[in-house]
Length: 81
Image 1 (cartoon, rainbow, N blue to C red):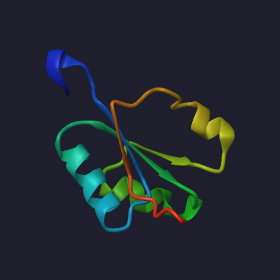
Image 2: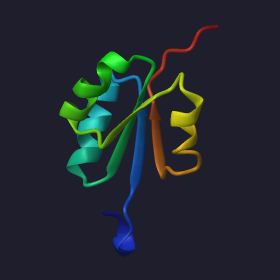
Image 3: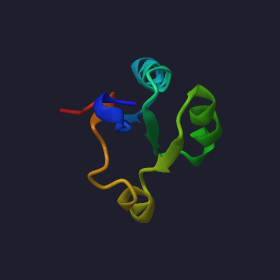
């Protein structure tokens, strides 16, 4: 819970290393945690780490459920130049 009793929503994309820690930390702090991944095979693993929901980022309808819903987003996706 955040200040004023409002639930905080935390999103994390890619969860190797830093992303893993982000999910665990947010879960420990009581936030609603949503993990974004391209792989349906990672749903169970994400939930074991503490994610309340896992969104397949290649699915537009799945992504639309969380449009403008987060207080904080941790993006650990490696960019390409």
